[in-house]
Image (cartoon, rainbow, N blue to C red; front, side, top):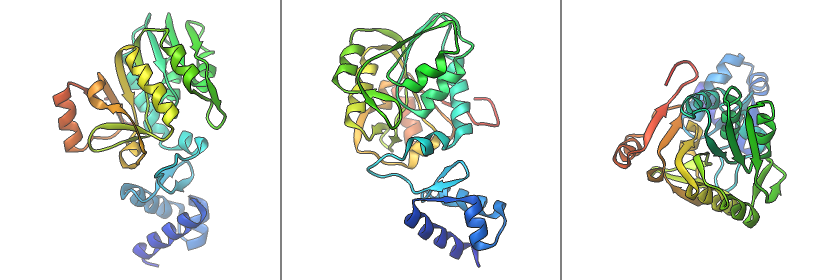
Length: 258
């Protein structure tokens, strides 16, 4: 079978099942695992699939993908982003980490930091930072979103308004060509907007998969951010806009320094 035909069939299977695996496709088409990995990478580059650990899923539109798939998506890139932003977070600072698998990676990268105060509406972040004895953890209250351990709603925003912190490190579900940060849950968007208001400096952490996704609710603009940490170059338009806004951009890949 020619590759172009195989790619079409992979998309048909992905649309039917919602997810495909490397091993399953290799057996189905009687080709090597490496061949399927190349096929999935090509489809991901075209924005037709999103790579996850062991396979790929359909790209999300108006609904977010599941937490497990989000956690496995582009793990190496998230680690590289987290290590880069952690280098720019000084000891002795207070910061807020919001809901997201990339901010959870940032929490892991902060294990060696000392005398920091971390506020969060992400129970996973709190559990990760428990292992750092030099970190004071404040979990803001709210409505528990069981799917990913996030806390959202009016109680969350009202609690955050009682604090002022040095740095906000937030993630988003999508980033469009206008430089707008987008998300799926309007309650989570309200929380993120409050976090940004209460921070002295603001960082966005988002891997390249967010460049090809769409989400309906607007958090704000990269113009509001002091720094943007990602793992792939931005488009010419967004990159130029960031220069005009004074938003620094750090691109950090899994195989090299920023």
